Length: 157
Image (cartoon, rainbow, N blue to C red; front, side, top):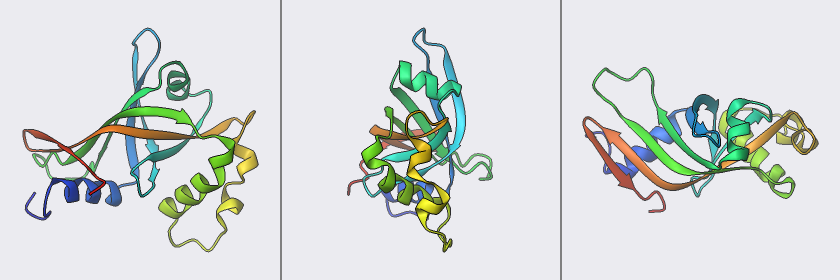
C-alpha cells in the first residue's frame, strides 16, 4: 500500500486503472458462475456493463440479483494481491437511464473518442426487446485486498 495514502485511495486507483471486472452470479439453485466484462463506473461507484440478455450471468441476475465483483490487474507482481472486491445487487438499466449510462460507459471505455456516445451506442438498441442490455451493479460493501488482508472501504470519502 506504500504508493497509496490509504485503502480508499488504493481501491479508487485499482478501479480507475482497470477496464475488466469479474462478476460472480448464481442461479436460483445456487449454482455459481463467473464472467469477465468491461465495466464503467459513475461518481457514486455504481458499476455498469453491457451483456447479451441470454448470457448465463444475465439470466442469473434476472433470477437472483445478488452479485459479487472483483477488479484487479492480472499482470501485477506475484504476491501483490491488490484487488477490489464488491458485494452488491445487479439490475437491468431502465430505459429512462440509458442515455446517462451510455455516456458514462462510452467515456470510461473510449475517453479519447470524438464520436458521440449515442452514435456508438444507440439507446434504442439496448432496450426491450434488444439482444443486448446494460446492467448496473450497486455496491453494498466494498473491500480492498492486499497481502493476506481484506479491508472494507468507503469510497464516498
